[in-house]
Image 1 (cartoon, rainbow, N blue to C red):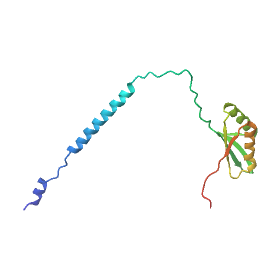
Image 2: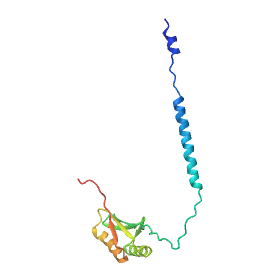
Image 3: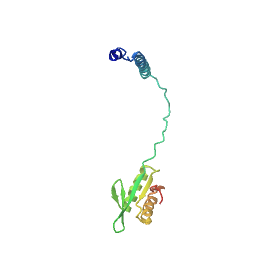
Length: 144
């Protein structure tokens, strides 16, 4: 008895017909959808005319972010866009921004070691420039 010869004759074959059918169906589907999209893009449309221009409200301006940094020895520095500024120059910068956009906002990021009076000084600069949208940020974390 030779069992090896019988096993080789009864090899399993994978039927590829269903997979080929699926591939052809996918090809037909993609061809049909791309032709519809192409038809929609080729349509020439004559848009209606309007006598008045529609006014679109412009998006809000990017807020000015002021970083109040703690320096060794209890000193403080003020930074806007990585540029160190003094309090009078902050007021001038805020005034210029207020002229460009009357709804200008200012975000103050104060170091936790900075005294409150330095953050209040930036708020005072905002008030002098006429900016009323002022906010301060904090880091949200777990309390321990």
